[in-house]
Image (tube, rainbow, N blue to C red; front, side, top):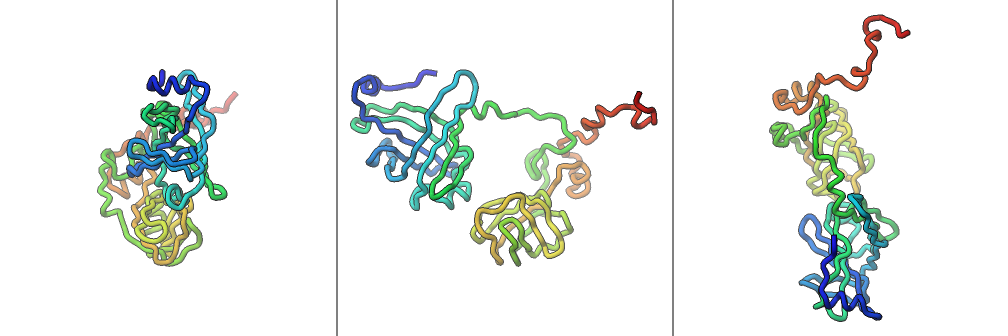
Amino acid sequence: MPKTISTALKNHLAGGITTLAACWKITRADSQVFGFTDHQANIVLSGVTYKATTGMRATAVDSSVGMAVDNLDVEGLLSGSDVTESDLLLGKYDYATVEIFLVNYADLSQGTLVLRKGTLGEVKLRRGMFLAELRGLTQRLIQNFIEAFSQDCRAKLGDSRCQVNLAPFTFGGSVSSSVSRRDFNGNSTQADGYFSYGKLTWTSGGNAGLSAEILFSQNSGGRILLWLPMPFEISAGDAFSVIAGCDKSFSTCKTKFNNAVNFRGEPHVPSGDDALEYPGDKSGIERS
């Protein structure tokens, strides 16, 4: 698809000497907008200040033919006022949209040449810097949007298809002691496994506002083990709310949530092993 560019900027690019600067515009999911540039001075364009003090740098921008996903990496310094380590760990830049473009910093009225648009993917932190993967717009086209038959439920607990009222299955609690950033004890009195595969949301402490999936829970000591460690330390007194877990099986849907009528799976569909099983395995006939 051809890129749109003004005649003035096109003529400038065709000249022997250019005064170009690359700019990055990052729009987070919370609508916060940040601008960065590789120019030696700040650039103000359309109400956005593109700061020159962040050390932003991108790898080469390559475009491929067809529907292949075009990716590149963006690298920059962590800044106390812009991109911070805590914001990255808290997920504030997850799925942020990014636009990279060129401008003539000597004459901003010539407009921009957009090089790439996309969303942020994996972000890595190292030695006071961050490295973010920028995924092209075709990334969404390779996602699967259809459902396949499965023995397990494909709905999310409490969503419009599941229709379970989560209020009776949501409990508040606080940390009594902590073993690590994913293993701690609380004041829960529910049976073993009640919160396994459930969701925990921190309401106070260093991880306030963050949510995590639960691997399993135990009645003894109110122990909760998360699938992944939290970005910040878990301390005694940190408060949380926790929702009962669902393992997506029909028996759990029926007995734990009394919601068999809304089960979004096919529990009687034969598994792969059943479909390939030799009849003699059950009839006593030996294979030849």
